[in-house]
Image (cartoon, rainbow, N blue to C red; front, side, top):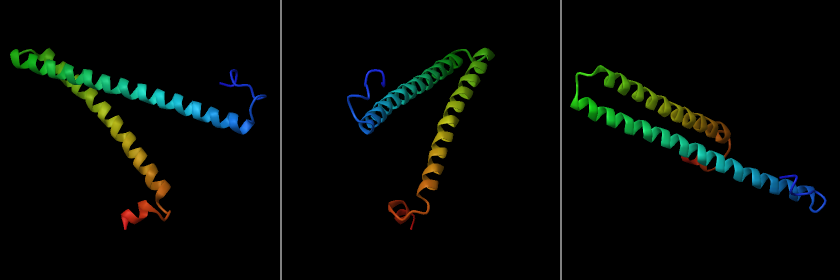
Length: 110
């Protein structure tokens, strides 16, 4: 960013603000791709679990299928736990930031 935008042409404050906006866009793009990748992986695990479940119904005596089902179910549980931990962390952060400030959050709590 700084190689393309020379500071001679613009003020430092303007350069700083445009750099922040550019970085914000890069971060948003990265998180979007990461979330899409996580959802795709979870959907693949769900499809695999459903396929194994139908296969187990056809041949219930195979223990290999049951073991594969358990491992995919465990992987799905780990992904769900990671998402839940992230949600709890963000909720705690919001409570910490807004706890002692008068405003909309406090009025909802009262």
